[in-house]
Length: 165
Image (cartoon, rainbow, N blue to C red; front, top):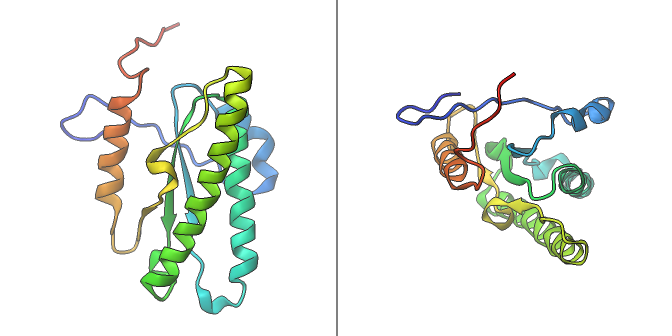
């Protein structure tokens, strides 16, 4: 993706969330990356909201741990999709607040351990607030893109020359 009027090129890789691919993820975690963690909102009528939320918590914590271990100081952005499937703004707000709470709790733990062992802590844009996206209607895409551009331009490594072979 090449944003207009910017000297930027984004290379986007989908690492997939399936366990079968988890061993290969480590090969794609690099220092100059921005990691977009995409999660799916759950329809409350599915009857499996509680189980889905626990699974979501486990996935978020897993990715935060993976990034902190492999790329200390990495930058992560959260995105929630299928926002039209929750049935109400209240249900979506409840889910995004849950994820934000999970992220903030984990960040607190990572920052404490990072201080002890002198490693850069993981950075999460908006302290765990998820960008809301409806891919069918295109809602939230423009805001997400703008924030990814702004984030990239603000990173300390932006503008560094990358060695060529």
